Length: 283
Image 1 (tube, rainbow, N blue to C red):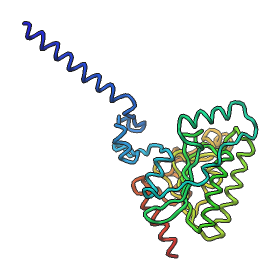
Image 2: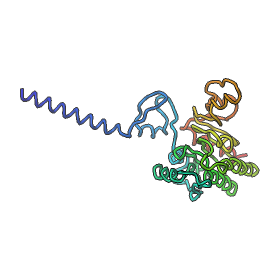
Image 3: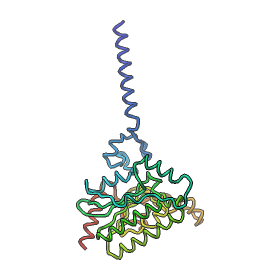
Image 4: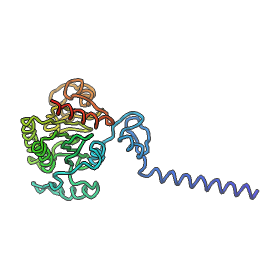
């Protein structure tokens, strides 16, 4: 009887320890796919390029992870890192929010730019990061993108921009909107120089970024099921007084209607970019 009691206590203790270990693993170690609802171990997800192994959903990426996936190891050299957020309107609480985000995300702005190699091919790479004010475009973002374009012209290198954005940054008002014209003008000079510009839409790309440099690529690629548009569906419907087709702002719909050139899964993105650069060089 005493032996049975001891066994029961040991079984309860073993179960408690297992539950504690399971609980420890659950904290910050798992993520739920909002498409197929499967629970995925984070390390497994990262090893799979942040793509759900069950349904293929492409999770959003930070600029750091994107650069790690695209640039050859050790080749990325940042440019424009000293171009920082400005507060031209002295918008109440804006800089405090920016400083809080810097501390939380460990990034300085919503785009990271640099020179790198992709399968040995040199290129200028700019990657937007939705973790910083939803990748919104302020003066610093516009200036970093413009610097990337000018560097591509000076060094005669192809330019690749991974776009993700919530649009123009309202805290900077008209200064933010002016970045649309500035980046577009710089891309016109890149085109005159006969250099390649590849734009890649990722989820989501909206607003002033879609209406400017994101849509001006010589080749426009997109990730699967990316949300791409300018304004929201309700605003568009109210403006044109028409019912919009389902999924009209998805990369698949836009491919079907000629707005983008190709949808590329993340596991093929690096090789596709490298091949496009080689094809352009061989002209």
